[in-house]
Image (cartoon, rainbow, N blue to C red; front, side, top):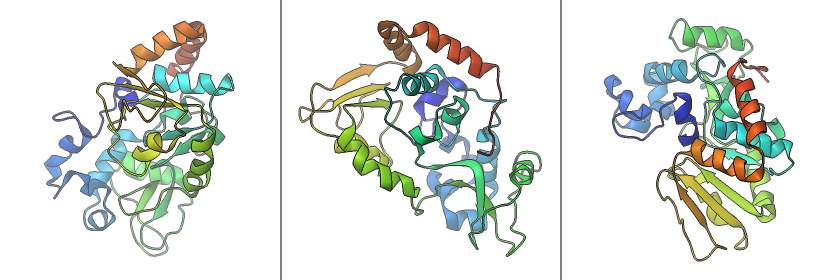
Length: 260
């Protein structure tokens, strides 16, 4: 979530400003209850509030320099995959190709009933119910609550996460870890699963996980804001102008494919 903070989206865990703290007015039994299916069935209001704030319309929140850098890596054919824990959809808005992106914790472009599992037919109606009416949509088949296809605690990650990861960790020659607390498994374990010869790079506000580790080839740790560090990297690569042009383009456009 750290790479989205400069877009105006709070992260989850920062004391005082994080999304979990801001949801305490709903008397959550514990912060993560907002992503608990049983709690959602009893009280969907906290998640609806969160979903209203985060729904990626392309109008309120825009991709950051770091999101655009990932797209630029793909266009330069230097990107194998992005494994994102974010649910804000900013990688999608930055035009990162779908085949290069694994949204490990889901997204808002589709939705399903939490009771019968049926997929929602009309995402425009779902979006309107959440954003304008600030209510949880209900299934026309079983009257259960519908939620966007965000992965809640206890739910499985997308099937392509498990299909792609074993191959990707063997293929990657560099692993970029950007703006994360590395606290939520199994995504948090990815940096430790790459080959020992893989160059690992952490750009973050603080050291996390096993960084730096002697088990890997010369871990690089840059403790700074992601966007500033990424601009410096782009400058060194001779990509700064292209990066800034792509960034400017994303700031002036809404979601090109809201339901892709």
